[in-house]
Length: 390
Image (cartoon, rainbow, N blue to C red; front, top):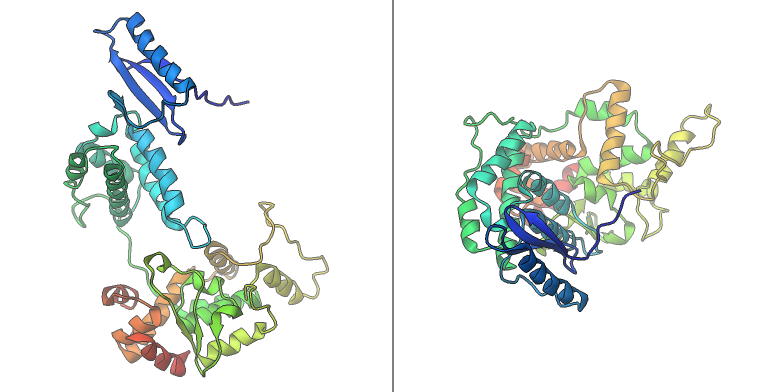
């Protein structure tokens, strides 16, 4: 049985100083130096500790940083993690992937230098984090992205008066890892999914996942957007339907997202026309029943529990959608591919047949540079493309 940490302040000898350790109301552990062990006698340190203890009992201790109080890197990481989980959220209050990305970025900083006061953070420490990530075989681009996130977290610490701006300025001097000038692993660009592999996989998945693949390829939407499709979010007034996802990647930037759905994708979706307006069109529960219906010789009832004992949900996540495709690829021995590569495949086709600007319109990119990454103006162009190939 694990013992919970006592919130009561404690007197410790730490790093050559008499130090009082305590937890603030925010749950973050703090430390306050009471004087050097060489210069302050124990009795005097205990008197200072008694004053802090009395303030704690009266509820007046956690009033911000006082004289001699130092915020450690571990405390900073804990405080920022709490902030990130409340800041990087969807409109319905769920944490986004960025909150988890921030946790991953800050973890090695905490593991290597957690006990160091934040004010002592130097560029060499960030370089040490870089080296640790290289040793962990992380890709060069991933390492650079995580260092950027550490700088973003330190910017928050400056605004929150946890550390002086000079510390952040020093950290900015750390150069990102350059291609050809580091032993960090390089990754190849995401390639479009091969149509022959997609076709082979579609024969091994459930009808529901088969439809999801078809709709995604015909529209170029993101995996999350196809997982979240509901009839309530689709305007079926014209020849080309307009799908406005209730949740999408750039929503936090106040950007709108409208996806044109052409006649071929419409025919695929109409297989699920009887699904309630507010329900998710694509359901794992329905997919499992369909899969068993295709195997009439299989007499056992569908098992609605995964191997992990988690119940099959009413909607797909990007991970469960990707896993369904991966399982099918392994089953038939096809080359593995992910839903994002399916989006790349359509981007490449649209760019080849219509041009870069049309590809930008279909994918919903605000910058032409982003489209170039995907494909090796406006809704009108997207509708024009969908009328011909959607």
